[in-house]
Amino acid sequence: MSLKTWSLVSLLSLFCLSSSLMASKQLTKQHRQRIAVALNYSRASFHRIRKNPIKRVLVEEQEKILNNLNLSQIDDAEVVKLYTSVLDEINRIQIADKERHVIKERFNRDFQRELLTTAMGLGAQVATLQYTSAVKTGASSWWDYRSLSWRRDNDALRVEKERMLTVVNKSSQFLDTFWKLTRKRNIPDRWLIRSNDLDELDVAMKEKNLETRLRILHRMERFMTCYPPYWYYIGRTEQMLGKTKQAAKTYQKMALLGNGHFRKDEMLAAGLTNLALIQEYSHDKHALATAKEALQQATTSWQANLVCAWILEKHGNKDQAEDTILRNIDLHLEEQQSRINLVALYYRTNNLPKLSAQLKQSKVVATLPMSLLIPCAAKLQQSQSLPAPVVKALSETLEASLGGRLGHNDFVVTAPPKWRLQTAGISLEIGKQEFSRSTIQQSKQQQQVRFSRVGQHIAIKKENGNISLSLLLQYPATPPIRIHLQERPSNTITRLALNHSFQIKSIDVEELPQQKVAHTKKEMQLTGTTTHKKTLVKVQTYKPTSPKVFTISLQGKTTQEKVTVPPAPQTEFSPPKTSPKTIFPSEHFLPHFRPARRR
Image (cartoon, rainbow, N blue to C red):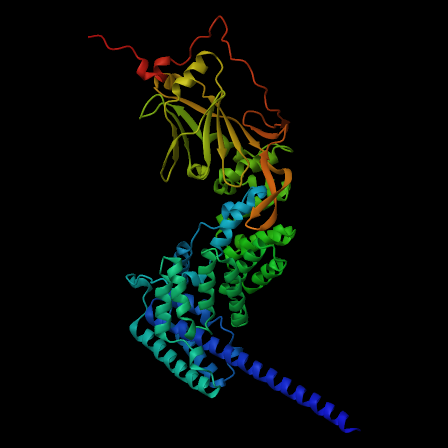
């Protein structure tokens, strides 16, 4: 073998040896980082127990962290033994099943309940507008609420001092032993968090100004690099600020550092869900895979389940999306929100048998917002009669009256909170006249929308025998809804009353306006000495010449789909020579036209 050949072999051997040493060094660093992460999780858990010595905190830390931590990351028998002894001391604290139930109920009530209902509800054609808001909101997890300070005034949930002292002593011994392990494994001190670091992190997360909070969090990075919740908090803050690109990178860093430490990781599930949401918004092809990975991390994160189900549906995985929503319902996790999203899924996928089965349940119908129930009823009525709970909900929940305490010339619409009238654009149509100026009053039991000084217009139409009343509701991301009203049958009570009531006659659900490109033209724009070409695309909104209107009739059993053509302009209405008898006295509508009192 020549000298040249020997030189080549030596170089190859040296290269392979150096590559293996570099790989070994990289693996060693990753292993040391995983030990640091496990220690940081343990320290954070014991720190919170010392800070809040109540049973609620013990239950949360035991279920979410201590009993859930993957001990295979701790390659030391002495440390594992001491860690187990701490868990044994916590288990000796008697917490009855009833107390655990109360603790969990309070914990669930503290969670934010306004999720992405409108974004994941109806209106697929304009979902992009709601989608942008959903991306900034994101999915929350238990870690978003972990830093809250719980009240200690409930003696029933306090822990005895002696028993709590034993837990604290055991945890201190565990941390001391674990600290020796870090020196043995050559773990840098900057990878390990201290109690004061955790206190500063809690203070930072209570900062309401998001920009200020983000700056404070970035200044803490030196001693937080191996604490995954730190990166989760930064990602959530960036996401709420609309910095989606930075948030996506932060969530990826969190997933790389925090994967594998827990058997069920709600924080990792929420972080990956938000990453999938951002990727879907950015048309990233990895969104579906990220959503599936998030579902593998935990099954009890109800917000992550709903968002991932939405992404699965958008990619055509309807059955898997349904199963993901059913996770929440089967485990009774935020069942109302989950039921709303399940009905919306059946509506969007045209699954009429399952949609009908849901609408036959009075309990389900009672929880659905009207912005979802009405389009579902319109679609279902095309092929079958409406279930009794739906007819009852539509016919009895909204009513209107002319008059009231503030004046007989006002038109007042009264509805329960499930109509969510405060979120809709609402207008009143009297014949061809439209009135959109109104005021709204809300209470826990009902909502009232008041149209002032419109009674005279109703009186004139009534006297001419040509009265047509309808309400037009435009909810976000929902087809326009037109509610036709009719006068209630008169009786002794209504004749004696000063106000006159109306009820729903029928409901029309119109199609959404569509977008089309009208024309394209090119222009030349001169900027200094450089000529730039730009293309102007004019987009206009239009309705088809014959829009489909699905009508829900509350008087008949079934109603077929009907197609309406916008009416042509008509001449002014001329009343018949023999005017019909006035049903409502005009002075009830026009109090300012009453004759003056005689002196």
